[in-house]
Image 1 (cartoon, rainbow, N blue to C red):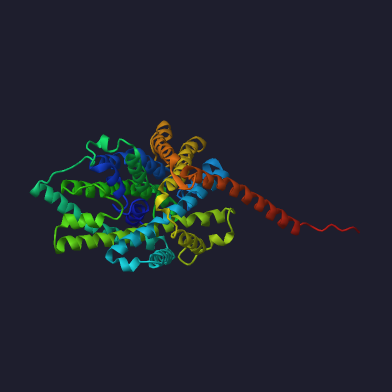
Image 2 (cartoon, one colour):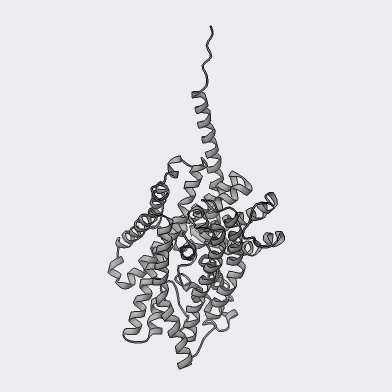
Length: 457
């Protein structure tokens, strides 16, 4: 992939457009929603982008963050990094076919009624798996087209919203329905939900690193792609919200899937509003496909590289004529297809906890490699050593906040989201030692088979 496809693919791995930020607005109101979306990139996205820019340019290896952590901290922590990321993908990847089905149902509820919803979700998994079998360039180039199709309706949306503000001067309600911004989030629940949803919408910057060997001039292109995608993500989140506010559209009860209703209001009565709403609905379908497609490319490289390291069966490292790990893609596709039927829309906090844990290991790898390999060539360097160490402070505090917020969230019965995520994370420790035992047993069996036979004369 060249620079532009890498930017487009990274954008879909992280954002995929304004879809998904609706609950931020519904929970916090315009003023706080825009403030959250402006501040989070500074404390969450920018440090991560700088960290990835340095490590990806210094170690542009297939497997990305798994390779960085393994090189800095050894195979045990490398395994945990990959396990946490793959476990998070089960919860994360279930969301995107659901988004596709949600918006497809807005064309006609009959399309997704009953068991048809699951069949459409399977169709998304199948389409993206076949697309990925064509290789990273096919995914990256396709992401450019999807990017343009997805954001075209929102460009019109923003222009109409700002023009209405200039011509009609509607009343702008920046605060939540409860009054002042603080009063509207005083109970803490809505604000916490808004922050967690915003963190989820700004996470995934490291995913593009796993296809480094399939990127043209990664030392130059990765840092540029991270910065460009970060700017695009913030702009495409904030401008549509600002356009809604300036157009005088109420934020009350605004939740997932409501962009079509907002487009209908902002486009006005008649054909214009209906056409814009349909275009936004089509963009929602593109969002689900584009994000699932780009993230499939990222996650499926992890089992391949782990297989090359002997930590998973060697079959997972098999590639097709495009250099794609086809066995890994098929295995992951089956796992995600089984997962999409489960109600994972409520498990964003689990996704955040698992992803956040893997992210902290990457920040640790950045600092450790500065100490252990000071002469490692770093075409892009994220500041001095103290600055590099401090980069992880903001993300760590936000992850700690996510842990604190989810402490009382229940999944089934008395099982909390935090306890469930901790159990999933600890399972990686057991799996690693099981893998080590199996490897030792296989090596012992192999050595006994080739041992020389000693005979007496």
